[in-house]
Amino acid sequence: MKTSARLYLVEGRVQGVGFRFFVEAEANKLGLRGYVRNLYDGRVEVYVMGEETLLERFRKRLEQGPPASRVERVEVRAAAHKNYSEFVIEASGKSIG
Image 1 (tube, rainbow, N blue to C red):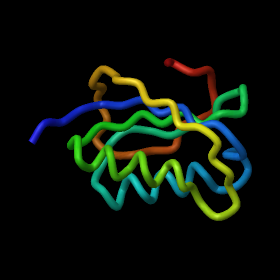
Image 2: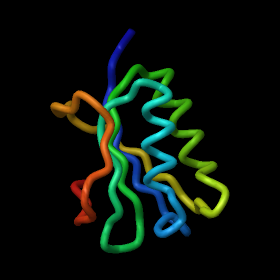
Image 3: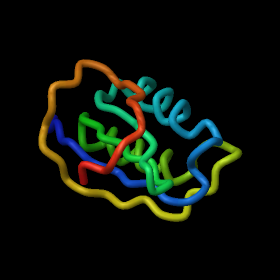
Image 4: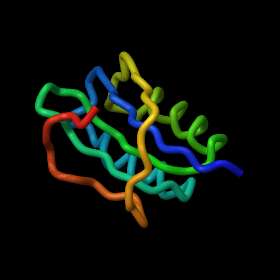
């Protein structure tokens, strides 16, 4: 099974609604590694590594989001592998994508 990395940029009402905690929980359920963080421009950035089939399931969960959120768009980009042994919430910042 091939391991891949993805960078997701999520737009909509995704800050201040528990979105990062939702993402962390979903990633941990699937055994994915990486991070989630708020961006200064109002989006949420998610970097994740895992098996292709799990990444697709994860993307669908991102599109739904938690109940208080309203996801308008999820941009998906291929990404290079990084050294993450777990999934974490990181401090807000500028997008690496």
